[in-house]
Length: 138
Image (cartoon, rainbow, N blue to C red):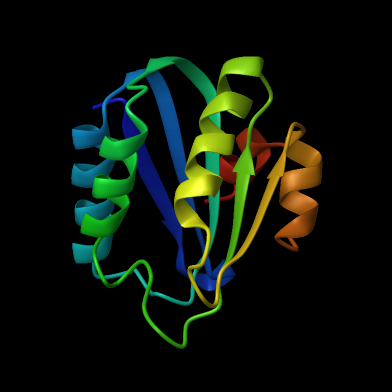
């Protein structure tokens, strides 16, 4: 699957990494797997790494439909997680723009999009300077 996640319960953080050509069905399946995981928590901050994406579905209507199908666990009322999109490439920035448009109006989310790993981790209050360093301490 071109989407995988790693939960850091003690840090109140989940890292989702996207690679290759991303299909919305893969995104939805990964979100559902995360929501069903025993360490998942709707208050967890999210780091969404889009650096490895090489292509994606471009149907905005389908993106909106997929967002509506996300598990309630991810967008629970009253939860206020930080969501940081790491978008270091032009393609990942295009994807992030489309996702941010689809998320407009969702209450309780604080969403950022940055191009640098260090900046993303800083926003999330993590001491590491790279995702690899974060994963090494898991």
